[in-house]
Image 1 (cartoon, rainbow, N blue to C red):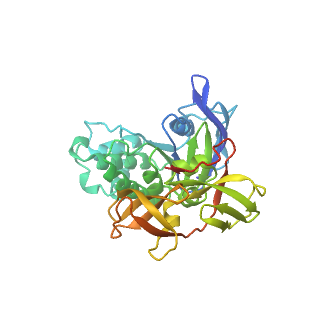
Image 2 (image 1 turned 90 degrees about the vertical axis):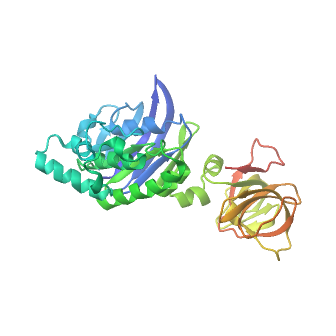
Image 3 (image 1 turned 30 degrees about the horizontal axis):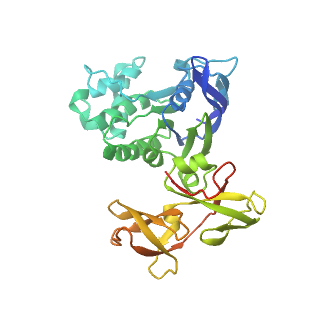
Length: 357
């Protein structure tokens, strides 16, 4: 179904924590609400489910209003499945019976057939007769997903579904859950504070912080085309460098005057900050620009180097790990920029320049 959240305000104890959130999720798409703890992500998710009231705005599905100032459709009439953080499996029931639990209105034979169908979909057909404690945490989470999918909902909501699992398992399980959802054509909206999970799962991601939905976009756009400084700092790594707008299409930076790929919104002479991601900085031994290695973070396939320009600003670069450079060593770099992204520097130190992420 198409989910539409229009100017929604949510909170608790009469105090709004997220105001004016607007987003749309198409049929079969997977969306993710990403942000720090206490930003209102779960409260908005529970409002979609029908467990929390809206303080303002509207939520609708396929044009049908689920909740607004006059209407509040009860959860059981919304045809929305929910997967909780703690799995909420019944310990005394088998995996099969846990999945069949939500199909109590169906004849037993039909319910069992549907339960086995969705267990096969999530790769757990062989675990049907086991008890929850006899399978791993990742398998338990897939059982919870199967239980949510069994009644054939229009949408599935997932509230921090992988937070109790080991970090190495989370991303793998996120990919498996995504594949299972895509196989059914059922859309989903997930809450997480982990961008790795969000990137692995979602077609669209909403970054929430400072009381509002900052941006609703693809992972690519959040990383390469962030709407503001908050999104740039929350998603990914990089540096903000002091710069000055030269004209509509050029900006003066510590790397010289660069050409933008779009018309710059600020008038000439405006002090701005330019976003530079680690993958914008290319290690090149033949480059005339030499910088100092001040920190190095070995990540297996590559190093994340923190580098100091002659002007004093810090930038970061991803370099294949066979280029093993010591702290204090000078290396050559050049830029490979697809997008020139700048933010206003109003109210910030004139010689500002800092790492983010």
